[in-house]
Image (tube, rainbow, N blue to C red; front, side):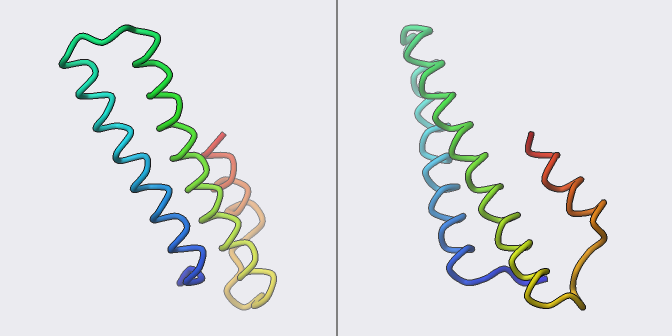
Length: 85
């Protein structure tokens, strides 16, 4: 199933943000920054990844509801959603 264009663009923006945050965490570790600062940045990267995943799943669910022919089983959709928990 192809994702909606807008949902794809939103997910890509969030993933790029997470990419930058992870690079920032690496730089912080290499430069010996404080643990609290590193954990704060790592938590932000984790949230950005979670939001991208939820955006992708939400788009897929909207498409499944709009076009039942492409709908996976309810168990498949639940498994995808729960994999982000």
